[in-house]
Length: 580
Ligand code: ARG
Image (tube, rainbow, N blue to C red; front, top):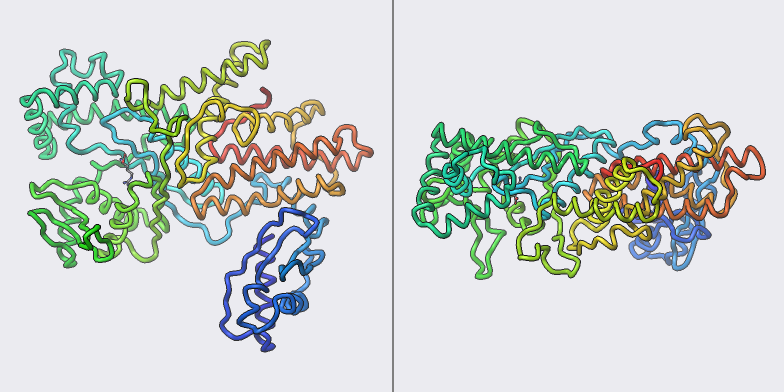
């Protein structure tokens, strides 16, 4: 709807320009917002206020001219001027009802993409395999997954890339340590990768002779020594299977096929450096090969380098990323590549994106976007740590979430049988952890707090999952599903209109999530929707409606709410329950 209003305004502006009321070349971005208070219409635009000055008119006078120039549209019942010169659009309730009926009949809920479909690479999760996945990997994994799901739902072709850190100096240390274990890879300590890493690190720090061996092994590994490669591969497989368990448990759509880590680009790194040299972009600094970018300067005002090869010949994180950018552009032919990586790597991406462009690794037809995210802190706002100051393993966090959800659900529903209880606890516990994260703005830091996220009140997973079960229970009582209803939607009561207007915004919200990579928009939307359903449910009896026609209309609104909630939660990667 916003888009069609924007289009109407555009036509009016063109007309006023042709008539000489507006100066040529005034091309404002036309803002159309949803109004909060529906007595002021459903949508508002400040376009008259933006253009009053260049037109040399009072905003309200220009607003009047615009209203006269607006083409008629069946979706708009009237337009009014408000306050200093806002244009308020009232949606035609019959047209809205028609759109909602159409959405209800469509398995895709009438959602489509604004703009053309694209091929999009989503770089997500991408943990370093030397260690076990810890809380720091939660965000890159689930935000990336949610955005990927939304893009897919809108019809984009999504290629997920798990750019794991599977190459580099830590592996020498781990190989040296594996070699010391009497049982090698059958060593029981390896079940706890994190502990294994710590033990290896301790050996490394304490024994210079071990450290020397570790360094030697890296050199051998990178030179392609068969035995080193075999051990390294075994280690990565083990680590990846740990990660895969976490993905499955988190209900994240990642498979071993999506893994294309740093090592996968190994054979191309020399060519990356050679290409940079051929383009005249390379300079040597202290024996290292660098690209200096004038627009990035350090505190002293000197240009910062992107180092692509160390003095000893080794390649770096940036080199691998340049190779992966080239691959994503030239082999995968992506229109967009989105990087869900910690905000603290912002400079790394700004610089490597720029180098990739100048070197021609990525054409101007591909967008590169770093979707940075803030830090997840502990409940006290301080860095998230175990009691003894270690990093918190993601599996431990998920165990605790499920455990807490289990007690909570059991407390509310002591009669549930064990199997169902476990299932609900899983959906609520894992859902709570994910939702708490997804509902925050991507770029802000936030405090991880079990009590908040497991509350049945507020913008939380339990609240939304419960809201869905309420809708489901209507249809259980009725003895039918949400499909195959009769009649049509007709919104009379204020609560029906508010719910209907919200339902009609689903597509627009999803387009926003896809454009900006911010799933919190979808969370807020679902939260608002659940709230509006609640007041509708309270004020507008469904099964006890005054007539069969009204009952059918309300059932249809309820069904569309149920489907939208379920679809929305599923796009966030949350499992819904029929009852809880
Ligand atoms: N492995 C890196 C880390 O844990 C993240 C990689 C992100 N993706 C990328 N293409 N650089 O910090």
